[in-house]
View 1 (cartoon, rainbow, N blue to C red):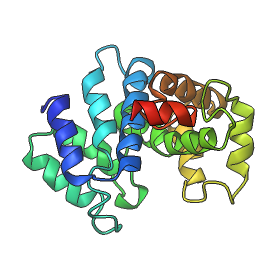
View 2: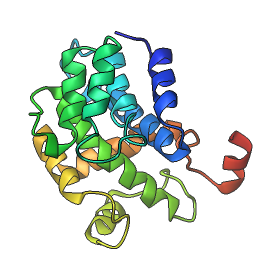
View 3: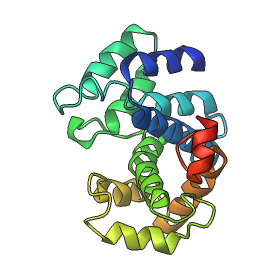
Length: 197
């Protein structure tokens, strides 16, 4: 399997936008944490992380449902990624009808939309941070259909259900997983953003 540097180069080749790259980093981080929590004892943390990093790498260039993630899957196949890896990425889009029958695929589906939603929640907080974010405030925002309306709430609920975890516990877990990489994914006070860029 290609290494992380090669995966990052692939992401950057197809994804020029900063926000989608930051989303990829967030999902990579959540997936690395998920490997330890939801994976088998022999789960490959790097593989899980790279699935998170590359799950949307083709989206910017091929955003329509008849292209993403199908085009990306073909590219990944040609770059030496395993069938299990590609199948997990295919499964994160419900319309592909690819079953999520591995822990890695279930975790990707469960973290993808939630990562985007948590970042959106943090950006409207005075601190622009996850440090003081409570699960109850996230759940309140989930009920507000006008907030971050591009995030599919059904996927968030279904993702936790497929993993077999309580939604509250999963939200807390992902918040905690993302805290160490807040600057890298665009969170924190605006002054910090300017100096870390």
